[in-house]
Length: 331
Ligand code: KG4
Ligand code: ZN
Image 1 (cartoon, helix red, strand yellow):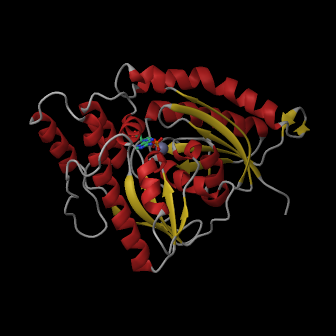
Image 2 (image 1 turned 60 degrees about the horizontal axis):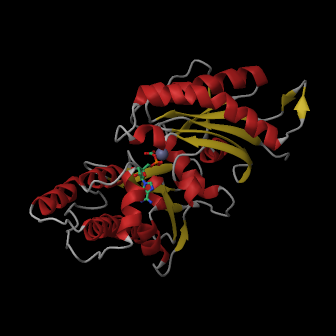
């Protein structure tokens, strides 16, 4: 079979990204612009600002990416096999920028439009440049999601456990703000925690049944602790102790899920999968084969979208819309 090249487009939050991926595994070219610096002053993503930035960036990034890939041309147009785009969950205004661009390209190039779920795409980042095959257990940890998933095949998956309140990335961001650290909070805590003692404050894991999580109590515990401390606040110790409590819960329940299903392959996905302590905890677990994307493919990117399109993309009509919450994944 001749190779299939998909273009992926990602604009669900504050990264504008496009990438060309061959057969779901081989990254041919990519471009990404992060808006972190723009939103830093507001302490979080401002949707309208983000959408405008996507609009300014996307055509330039696509032109640069196609130039770098240097694909064979037909009637002066690059030859690809499909245009994939995240159409949810995410910010509606930002999603529509990517989706409208994808629709126009699919129509102009006369190739299928493929709709991709952002969560499924995060997991598919683990196929890029690897030999990973289902079945496996995936821990998806991002700004909006925290869930343990069972991927039975490339197209069938189910949710085994999820957060009952805050997502893990959200908890990182909120606690970072509390400690006066810059946005985005996760990387700030990760960095500072390397100078702190994770046992300084014995924050407890929330007592939640089964494979579900809860992080809002932990966030409150950090807040109460800060209120009762006198200056100077030991923010490195607080960051390390908070990080350890979040990651212990994520680690313990993911391992339990894999053991329950007698699966040895564990996959980490999403922005929080970039966390160095979380990676270390999983790297030292004996008896499991661990897959975690390089840092550039943990946070939002378009290579994961093109890979997801190859394995589980839904061919979509040009009238398809975007969704802000929930899932549109194979179950
Ligand atoms: O997957 P992602 O880029 O976007 C969403 O789909 O939400 O994840 C962003 C989240 C943010 O909450 C950010 O603070 C967190 O991932 N994050 C981290 C790290 N890098 C990003 N959290 C902990 N440690 C990190 N190194
Ligand atoms: Zn994401």
